[in-house]
Length: 141
Length: 347
Ligand SMILES: [Zn+2]
Image (cartoon, rainbow over all chains, first blue to last red):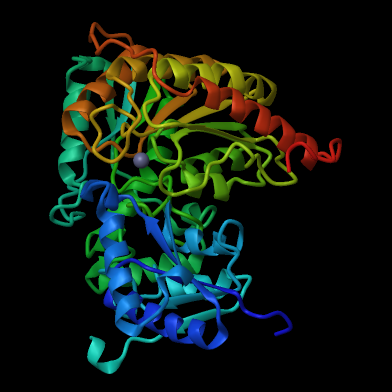
């Protein structure tokens, strides 16, 4: 890698798997002095949960940052309508301008081991910047 | 005459609490019954799309994977989309229904087609289920028609952008895809600058509208931006992705249409067809049951002749500026793609 890694975009849907990805990103960002931008895709069903659902996610992200001592000023939050895969692929563009994508291995409520709708596998096929898939720990299941 | 697919038992495609549910189809059938068509309604036998018919628009490997997933009992495919043991066979019925309806339409003069199936289809990509959709039903019929040399207009008035349909026909010179949709909203695609691939430049027309847009604005968008493209394309068939989630009562989005607006849109769609007998409506979304029933009746009543009285059309909502913006953004994107404009003012 020739350029320094400045911005890490992490997919965040509130799942335990996404929380692991966020923790991993905080640790890496501290070593590299990079920013972390949490990217949350608002899907079809989330419209039924009311407008404050993304805010609840933001609270839990702040809690995670405080827990590991990650500076909130280096933390961004990006909420946009769409499916998780397309939204994360666009994280390379402005305003995020990510140099690295990080996702958990399994989204919220999604069937374990399923290739069909796996955001991480689709990203692996389509991403134009490096991608890290953070596996679920043994005790996370 | 209205030609519609005959009923199949779709109770097996259900996820408790999910808005894409079997009651939707019952509401749709009630809407058709409200028209009292009598002998002017023909139901065609359920038909399962074959693998050859499906692989015109889907990857074979995706079909295998989806079939196997359902056979093993199904589950959540993504945070929005589910499949059950029965979903694979029901999705094949849904994808085949348009083929059977079109075939029957050819045996009658001036009939209108209505394909009332679930799961819906317009978000389904070549290789991926998403947005409640497993197989792209309207695309299966459109591809069959273009295979016979037809030129197909797909008009998509579902409140969500039909990303699957757009992507399947992105570079196909025989399909014109026109979509009105709320923006921003799932799935996030459908900007006015998305105009089609190099072999089909201009044959994707996206008309993104803000929350609160009313029926008059949707009609203006179609009149002002889409109509000239339709005239030039000169379709031989018109297929409509008729979602009813742009209705003001729908819980999944914030456009402000009424049943009467769908009657007006249906009349516009009929006007785009080259002659009677070349217009078919495919059910997509719509999650408020009473709005769904009234809007289906309004749509079909407007084109088959009926004394059904829909809700009043809506006017005066937001979005006129966005229609003008879509038109200019589209124009600039076209000039850039054709190499006649460096696009400085655009970038
Ligand atoms: Zn929809």
